Amino acid sequence: MASVSNQPTKITRTERGLVIAGTRITLYQFMDYIHGGYPRSLIRQHFPQITDEKFDAAMSYIEANRAEVEAEYQTVVKDDEEIRQYWDAQNREYFAQIAKLPPPPGRETAWAKLQAAKARLESKS
Image (cartoon, rainbow, N blue to C red; front, side, top):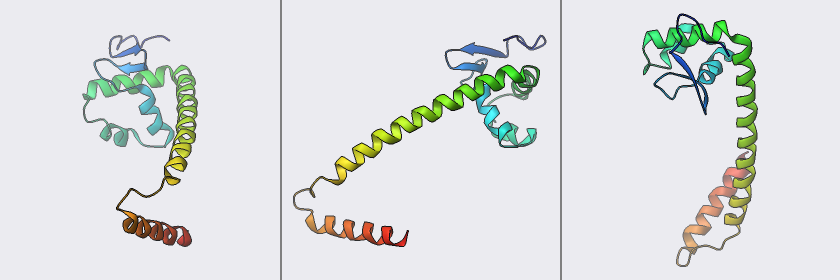
């Protein structure tokens, strides 16, 4: 991926992908807002920790290399979704195991109240 010629050191590639130099902010975070239809001024408000110069460099880089940044962004989104699905499945199994456990000794009354409250919440859904 080519660097923007007037901003060669503002955007760097790390193991996390394209980042604003000297930060942990990726260009893919900007893409989340761009895809959400946020105007530039609102995107800027979400990154108060960076200078206007770095913000402008990031936006310029995205505009100049849109196809390549978009392709990488789609890969990041896909990977994140796969990771989320994996951990959702892991947590579902873990929580199912916890739900089968008996109440802690001496807390049977509190446990019964908790189960009743859960039942009320589920019946409202």
